[in-house]
Length: 251
Image (cartoon, rainbow, N blue to C red; front, side, top):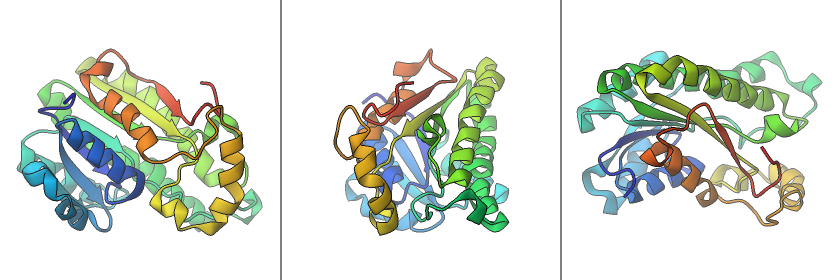
């Protein structure tokens, strides 16, 4: 019960990797707010064993007003905010293509959610964490910026920006005892990825073969790293990006 007494918000928590984080945090004793553009309330209601420990809040993280409403809902329900897991992002529905074929609208769509959205969610919770005397922000990044994965430049650039933001925010918020770290998964068989045969065909086998631990990666493989950064086990760790990919990249 490493997160007993803590309140965590998980953006993009209604399904896939984000929902695995929700379940992992609940299992460690946290109260959890599922924030998602679609299905947040339904996902919370489906967790029958969670009782009053979880709520769902509709939220588009690229909207400042909606992220502020998300933070207000967490305070109203549970009275505090200790952890923000910045998981919401665009990936599973992306098609691999040369960078010359990426138009401005697609660039904007990815950056608005993967970069600006994470900044807006962070901005919404930091005043509460300052007032409480501390907190933990966990950004869900990717191993792709470290490896320079081709044919998804907008996505790789967005996650590279998030890695840089993690370091800068850690320095900016450290005096308030707010820790900022990132988890960088490898290619993970989430619900969204499994629904995209194009990505599976192009990336599943090559990702598995590139790993020291040569098997598919699943959402549960990332939960422990998120719980570590959310809990007091990492009380003296900030500004770090932990790559969780079975040893495809040593960071």
